[in-house]
Image (cartoon, rainbow, N blue to C red; front, side, top):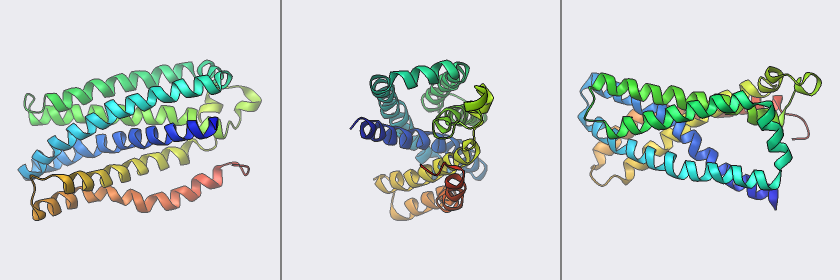
Length: 232
């Protein structure tokens, strides 16, 4: 029961969190592309998409993130205490990334018309970098729980953080974030009642480049499973 409860909350949170990373990278990239082409239809949609990103990531993502801490703290306090002691500076770094992500995300959405287009795209890049940085740091801690590697012998921070599944897991999380962003882009575009069929087609085609993550997830998954322990 306890393990299932952790899994349910974690799967929901990680799906939202990785969507936030992928969409955080995709949105400013598409905005810069639309500005170069003078594509006002795409720019208008991206503004509405940014609102969806903020609501899903900063509301649902935050609530489920707190839910994970509460549940795992109640179910396995000793394991959480070990992770906090062992990776205290990694946690601190991740929280700084997350704070920058939150602040830049709000500025990106609420100052859409108040900043110059170039500055606005730069704010989006800050959001994208901080979101991916948060993912990269937390990935080392999560993959450590699966494959502690050399940490078992040395107790070294770096041996635990850069463990055997760190790189395959990081690449897999990154490209799956792109896939989630591309899928959400298509869903939101199809649900946008202000767009006609051809406008939806145009917008979905623009965002479809990120769906390449769906194909890349297959070979990278084999890499990840090859690095995973046999009992897992």
